[in-house]
Amino acid sequence: MEEFEIELKKSTINELEDTLEALLDILTLDRINQLDLDAVFRAAHSLKGNSKAAEFDTIASVTHKLEDLLLVKKNSEASISETFLDLLLEFTDTLQRSIEKLKLDLSYIPTFNELEHKINSFEETETEEIKESSMNNSLRKLLLIDDDIDIYNTINTFLSDTFEIDYVSNAVQAIEDCKIEDYDLIICDYKMPVMNGQEFALYLRQGSSKNKETPMIFLTAFTPKLFSQKSIWEDVFFMSKPIKKKKLRYYAKCALQRKLAYQEAS
Image (cartoon, rainbow, N blue to C red; front, side, top):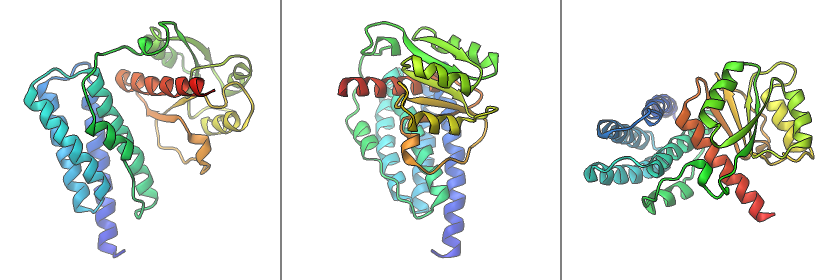
């Protein structure tokens, strides 16, 4: 790869990151109106154009499909449903993960088969809250690990309608709780004393507790360097601080869907 091509790709990655951050800011607003949807469409158009210029062809292709769907939504002037918002959040999250991999290896070619299928086959459905989705309307079990009581208060405010929350201040106590209780979701601060989030994930995934496969959300104010073992990061989401309600609830919904899939398969 020529030096100018390397610089172009690196510069484009930075632009894509900035655009996705701006897109996420829009998607996590309390309410999205038609003007916001126009901004989402412009962001998608920018993502497509920049990706194509740097020959990130698969990113350009999946964004083009989303752009077509956004155009239909814009022309219909219909309100933005939770179903459509979830699709936009999944698109943003999937691209952010792919860009993180591209930053490590510019020759990496991301694939978006599942995301493309969801975009191509998208249909509006009746909005349902997380707690109503195949869970018999009962509260699910959540373990929160963080030494900041303000984080507990925030999580409790955003998710108490869906989860019964067990709260501990360190990973050592969490390990003991994970031996006893079968949780549907674990939310954990990444930077903790004694045992950080990565070490906690490694212990949990390689151990034999009831929560070996429980989905996790890590809260972090920075981009951590991760162990390379792919199995550790299955069903693990990273969420930056400050916590945004819509993205937290989106990740929680994804986690519960994974947990339900495990339960149905077992």
